[in-house]
Image 1 (tube, helix red, strand yellow):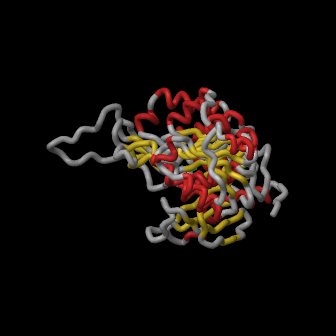
Image 2 (spheres, rainbow, N blue to C red):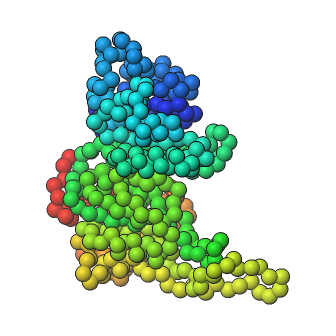
Image 3 (cartoon, rainbow, N blue to C red):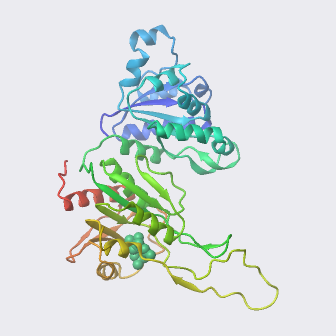
Length: 405
Ligand code: C5P
């Protein structure tokens, strides 16, 4: 990302303070920032702080003659590699969807010919409002990239979706949109599964596991950043859909399998989802009632389909390369080797998910890569995004794609 230029439009929301951190972290990674504020933004963050951190003048006023003499708004909007709107308030999104241009921020968003990434942040009711959702659909259809929002406690005291994506998530989205170094996979279709599955017992209860989806989502984002056409089939997770990825949301293993089969043909399939091995044998139509007498009910389980094995053994549309994951708590490599053979995949990434590893739900992963011919490559403990980038590189090599620096 060295030297890439970000035009950062700061909207008027409490999350504007996170922009300061975004600039700091982004500059550490070599990004250059030029900031534009809306009038409301300056109630939350001062142009002076933004200018100090960005090391550049902050642009605020459409009609400022100096600004226009120094740099017209058209040039401002185009002298960037990417335009980022953070926080993207409900009002800014509405203006963008409607094509308004009544201040500097909205004008340059209309005038730009560069990709635009928005990081929405607002009260959960404002987010859920049909008008906001309609605007968002419109913006997506117009090719605007969206990162977040996340679900959680908000500064207004309410809880729900509406919290601006974390700085690291925004940076990952920026990275995915800026064409980076590394292998290029244009024209390659990739299927990625991610997250847990949720197997209902009755309308209110379900069986699931602790998978966060972080590794699978990072893999989908890394393939998209390399130019691949990515379908991500995700179980229920608290993560934003990765930018530039077609995400299909499912709950159960059966739904996940159906979505995967519908995505075929693909050249590469990476099964990173923690699919529940079993599901309740009966899915009750009404809530199972607690009775005063009698023993607690016994739960009868039945097998779920094995998605990885189904793809690896597909009679007509087996992907060229099928990659599985093996989450193990003991004898990690030995068990993973047996799994590779049993499931018929080409590569397996084995990770130790023992209780002290911090892998499940955590940001880092330690992976052993095992090949069909039994060769083993152990990677050091890495950020899950770096694991994803290495996997993309490995897949590109297998596909015989040129790998640049
Ligand atoms: O057998 P196990 O669940 O440990 O295998 C892990 C690998 O198999 C992962 O790649 C996971 O995504 C995949 N898997 C699957 N469908 C299942 C179970 C596991 O695709 N029902």
